[in-house]
Amino acid sequence: MKPIFVLNGPNLNRLGRREPAIYGTTTLEEVEQLCRAASGERPIVFRQTNSEESLINWVHEAIDEGCGIIINPAAFTFTSLALLDALKMFDGPVIEFHISNIHKREPIYHRSYVSMRADAVMAGLGATGYAAAVRCMLDMVAARPAAAMAALPI
Image (cartoon, rainbow, N blue to C red):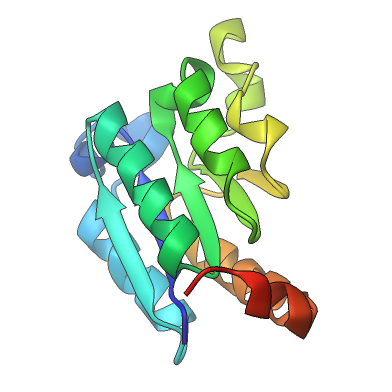
């Protein structure tokens, strides 16, 4: 069974301590536990990096091994065409996830390159919203025609 990749960008390793008024007090370790609990039998690959290169390499890995990507690219959302290009190569469903409602924040946070590829965008649910993203991804993967899933690289 192919895993769901849950990929997290810069500064998310500081969850629970970073601007708790915006991001809450849930830690990244707790987010990972929520994702694994929500995934049932579906395996999860859960990763965080402060490096754009690593994030892109993990998308490449998901192209070869994953059934879906949930990505919180953090600041790379608004800056990385390279990340967009990598995500465009992925044939499965992609959910762009943000802990805060980026549309209520400063204008610099309103233009997402990742949204140009994402099948769905979830924002403003807090860190515990990751579990909802996993449940949505499970539904999206299940809804894909068997032929489309068989065409995904192994």
